[in-house]
Length: 83
Image (cartoon, rainbow, N blue to C red):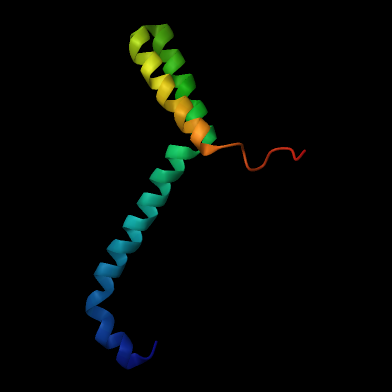
């Protein structure tokens, strides 16, 4: 990018910055939504909350169903053993 182009596109810098940040936030949210390690952590948290009485059996079952669905959609771990 030359000096002239840089000067002309300078007013767009904040827009590009906001777009870059939004893209990073989206990537992180998506990673947490489908990452098997994160999902397993959430399942453990649900179990702990159920055992401590923080949530009801019905709420726990609903949460577990959602997390297991996500885990199944994520597919097999990518770093697993090859057959």
